[in-house]
Image (tube, rainbow, N blue to C red; front, side):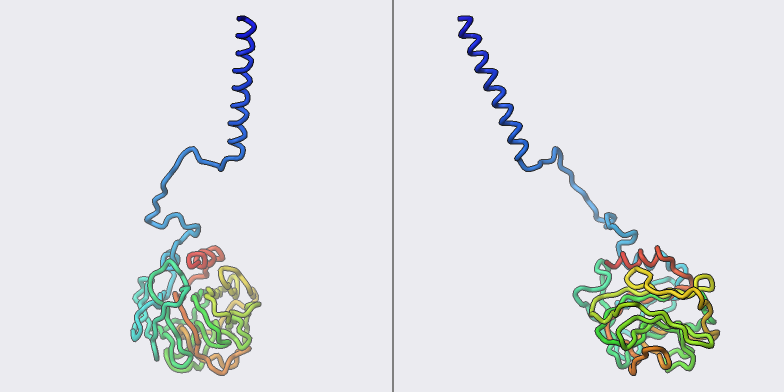
Length: 284
């Protein structure tokens, strides 16, 4: 009886060891399973990786230094480009104003349409003249397939062709972005690559006595000149989508921009590299 009990005990022990081995093997090959579950509620879009979830919020964060900020999201036929900066500097749509909602749209988390410029008479004029801005930033989202046209610039005339014109961002005949200023001589900085690929791009130009000229494309500094720190001294108006580019390197025959725009703004401050990167990230 004792011998049989010992034998039975060994059998039971062996079975237990075998069962344990089977459990270990099953755990090794079984799919990973979490030991808990959780639900995340994010009704305020606070889980965005960018500091600002929308372009509207990004621009609003720096609106204290803005001359104007146009979302360019009005309906077709509108005459007023509403200033979202709080400065009451509403612009005026000149020529044909057409709203469009391309897919994808720039600033995909922002509601509203984009402004389609026809390349012949569409542009936005601003209501207030500015005396010799020496520190400033110009910003716009755009897309185009046409090599040529003014994005944003500063000119001596509010709506007609300007006699004096500089502080201009334009697309040259090679499809590159150019930021130009003038003070006795013409000085330009140019993006290394073309932007006429039909994709949305974000451009910011800055100028200041401390840092000279800088050109950012899609959140990254692509060109700069620290030596050219003073633009031409005159009183003028910022223009969006059209003014003369006569005499500038790579200037096209047609000065009107052909393509689509969203969120055009001009600031009386020099946006930092971090601010520019944050504005771009808010639109991706």
